[in-house]
Length: 228
Image 1 (cartoon, rainbow, N blue to C red):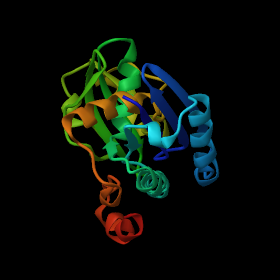
Image 2: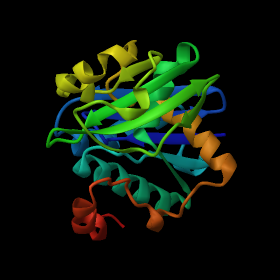
Image 3: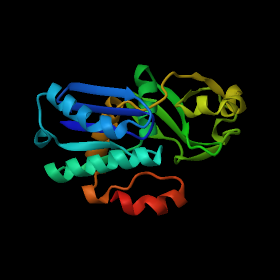
Image 4: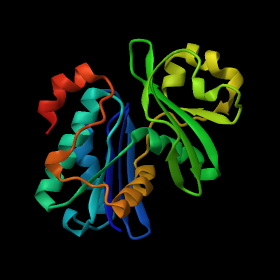
């Protein structure tokens, strides 16, 4: 399966192309530079792969949750490319991609937290085994306090920038964590496996039907009309 994956939901602007078993990537972590970086990075990985959009089977979109502006950038670019090349889009969780990277070296339970501002994080809890990522609970907003699902356990690995951004979150859950990973942001190559699974399940949408995974309803209501 030939796929393009992209994500700008965090500080990272990340792109990957999968052609057969070969993967080509670009990844940069620069604040407020996604609009400038994303299109050249896509062109670069397509050139590395010696392929064109018309050779692809679909586009994998890291669909958040995360930065509202960042999610709009990736969604808009994915929509434009999909319209032009008549491709379907597979929206997948940006936080699940973080979990997939943590679990790439072996089975793991992963608690991913990303900065949601206002003393909150976006939280996702996952089990990763043999490349398969399973959500253990719906992704949600979480205050910097004890995470109920971790109580009585000590086998979760903390990942994502939210743990660093709000040290109080880590302190509140330290006793229930196995440790912390150095994976802070999604990398596009780990979106690819999620995208393959989504496409095989038929979880794709037409370009005009992409809706970023906003978890703050008020922001979603204000920005929804600008994304489609």
